[in-house]
Image (cartoon, rainbow, N blue to C red; front, side, top):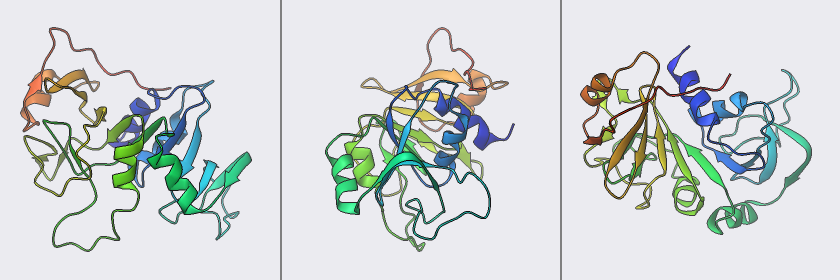
Length: 218
C-alpha cells in the first residue's frame, strides 16, 4: 500500500454518518474512496456544491461541474449547487463538521502552514484560511517528511494558514493529536516503531505508555 492510500484510509475512519465535509485538493480527495461501509458523507466544495462525488465513469466530465481545484466531479442525486458566497457562508458560519486538508508543516502548537512557499508561484490561499478557522474539526493529511526533512516542526517556518490549533494530524508514519499540553502520539503506522517516529519528527512528542498501531479502513 502506498503512503497516500494509507493516510487516506486512516483519515476515512474519522468520519461519522451524515457528516458535512470538505476535502482539500490533492491527497485529501482520496479519502472519499475509502469511507467505511454504511457511512454516508455529504462532501462540500468551496466553489459551490454539496453532494459531490467522483465521476461515475471516464468520459462523462462536464466542464461546469468541478471541484475547487478545477477537476471534474460527479454529483449524487439531490446534490445542491449554489454560488461561492453561500458556500463560504457554510464554512465561515461553522456548519462544516470536518475538513481534511493537506499540509506543508504543522508545529508543536498545532498551527498549520499549507498554502504558500515564499518565492514560489502559488494560485492563492483559496479556502484554506476559512476552512481551518471555520470547520468544527480540522484534520491534516500529509506525509511525515519531505526530502528527508520533518514536516512536524517545533515552529512553522512557512506562513501560517490560521492561528487555530488543528484537531488531528495523520501521516504515513503516525497519528498525532495537538493538545493544550503539546503533540500527543496517538498511533503508529503498521510496521513503524515509536522510535522511528521520534527520529523523523523535529517537534517534541508526548508518548503515552502504550501506542497502538493505526487501524485503516477496508
